[in-house]
Every structure is written in structure tokens, then in C-alpha cells.
Image 1 (cartoon, rainbow, N blue to C red):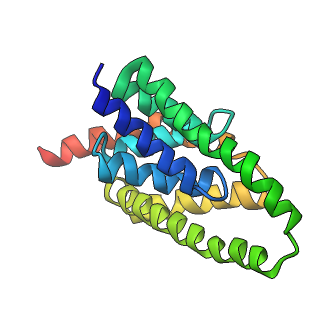
Image 2: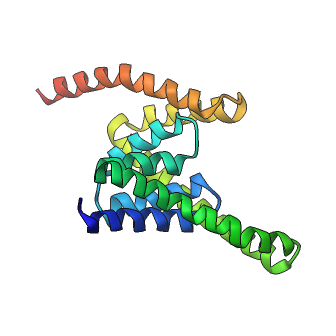
Length: 190
């Protein structure tokens, strides 16, 4: 067991858990930064796959991603380490801060703090979405990417289809369509 690796796994997921104000969606760009950019444990494509599969499963996304990534990088100890690192900040914040913040929830300072964080989370999510769209465009092309995006938006936002079903449908499309795309790419390369 590599102690330095386990320490880095813990610190990476602790930072993501501690700074992920607002839950899973705001934590995803932080996990991406730690896992892909900072530590280079995987590339963007693998991270996207883990995110897609994690979103289609029940439970908090950050703990599912931490469990898988921790296991992939550091085995069973890495899994335990990463999940523990994600959960500790939430528990600490719940125990220490929520009681205090609840008693001061009408304070203009507390309201200002929570309102000031919201745009930052939006920018982080937009940045990650733009990165994913760029990758989808390079592998699928703009037309397919836009069509899939619009259909997904319509199903999720206007038809109230659960995201797991949308993701599951797109995974099925990728499974079936991916074979066709690979065959077409190989034929073009000849």
C-alpha cells in the first residue's frame, strides 16, 4: 500500500467535499479538477464515462464517483479513503455550521454569503458542461451533439423524464450507435 497515494486520494476528495457548496452538481467540477487536471489519474473521456454511469445510479454522485475512482486508483483502501474524505466535510459542516447558520438565517450577511456562492457554482458547472460539449462535438459532430442535447433538454425539462432514464437511453444509443460510428470512422480512414 502506497501511503503517499492514499494521502493524495484523501486530500483530493476532502477538498472536493469541503468546497462543493451546494451538493453533488457543484462537487463534480471540483472532483474533475482533482482527478483529471491536478493528479492526472484519468483523462476527460474516462471521467465523463464515470459521471454518466454514476448519474444513472441511485445515491449521491460524489460518493459514487469517489468510491469508483478511489478503488481504481488505490484499491479497497483507496475506495474507503475517498468515500470517507467526501463524507467527513458534510458531517463536519452539518454538525458545526448548520446550527449556527440556521440561527442566523435571516441575517443579511448569511443571505449574502449563500447568494454570492450561487454564481460561482453556475460558472463551474458551465465550464464543465462546455468541456463535455467540446468533447462530444469532436467525437459525434455538432449536429448529433446539438440534437442529443436538445432531445435531452426536452425530455428532462419539459416532459419531466427522470435523468436516469435520459442517461440510460443515451447509454443505449451510445452502445448501439457507437458501433456504427466506429465502423464509419474505420471505413473513412481506409
